[in-house]
Amino acid sequence: EAVRAGRVGAGLRVLDASWYPPKERNARQEFKERHIPGASFFDIEECRDKSSPYDFMLPSESQFADYVGGLGVSNDTHVVVYDGDEVGTFYAPRAWWMFRAFGHKEVSVLNGGFKNWVKEGHPVTAEVTQPTPAIFKARLNRALVKTFDEMVQNVSSLKFQVVDSRPEGRFRGTELDQGLESGHIPGAVNIPFHSFLSETGHEKSIEEIQEIFREKKVDLSKPLTATCRKGVTACQIALAAFLCGKRDVAVYDGSWSEWFHRAPPHYKVSEVKRSKA
Image (tube, rainbow, N blue to C red; front, side, top):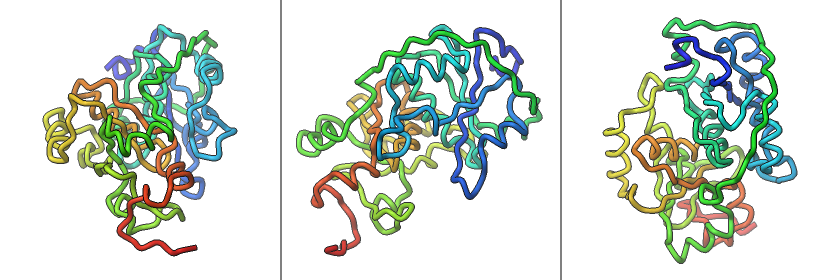
């Protein structure tokens, strides 16, 4: 609401966390052409662990602190993230979860995204403002991040529920995922992230979200970890649960891209018979 009222001052930083496949759209270029007044571009390609073979893995505490400090975010700043995706919200929940994983509580996602901001006639600008650098101290909250080893242990221990946010075909293994054979982690439940978004691209109501989890027999009173292809749409599960009052959903950062390359074959559930190659 503060964004709508135009109070983008010292206590509030608005970040555009858009990312698109390079052949389709150029997020940085689109930001330069139009964005919410006072917003900065949060580059998910920059703010990540570049040494990892997997996409968009969390950076170190110091890398994150330096990056968001450069965007004018201190530990007291209220951060609002959005993106320009056609579905309404796609990459913004990943940025939201990253802030929370590094100990920042005051972070929100703009409901409906930039698409609806424009549709509702709110102001946009091409003017890029330079934020005053701030000091951000990051402390990784390990409870919100799951590693490959923890996910492997959980296949037999079943300490936490696992929800996979990818489209059904990729979860079942019937369609390729960006050239990667697909399938899922044993015991995972599939709730495609689109399920939580309305036709207009807004988050569904809390009652509707609770019903979606109930239908899939996911118990929000028990430990829950979200996974997807590369740790991005999994954050939509964390956000949906957060809206229902569950603030401790972990995200498996490596997700299917890591699992596919590292897990033993019998830990990759697919309806498609794999080639022996």
